[in-house]
Length: 141
Image (cartoon, rainbow, N blue to C red; front, side, top):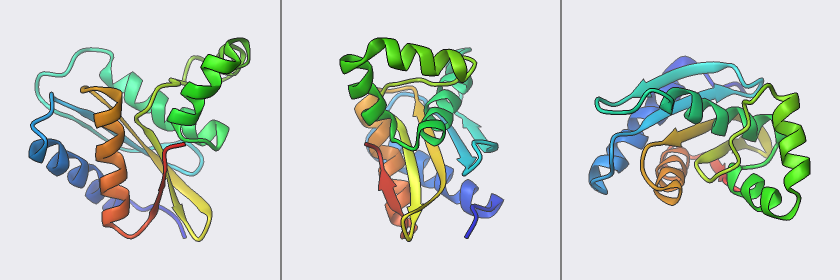
């Protein structure tokens, strides 16, 4: 199974819907496939310049390491030099804070959602909501 454009768009829309329900700050949402390639990027009005890069860094970092970005955050606290080295190898595209959630189906990684704009916990909650709403397993770490 692969993550197609229609599914990626629906995931991003569900993230925005959840953010509206929670009255969150403007979000930027990146959905990438299992190879870390960008499928969709939604950027709400009022987001700042670096938000697209941050959202993609959360999603691509999760794919690159096979771990949700919350797990990467915990690893960065325990082993900062390791995560710094992995970020260098990834060309700076590894943002180790919550908000990057793997999309799994039957234990396979289909892709990831990266969200930024509100608190990292709220970003992550929107991604998890969207993934689970479509019947996938969310792995934030």
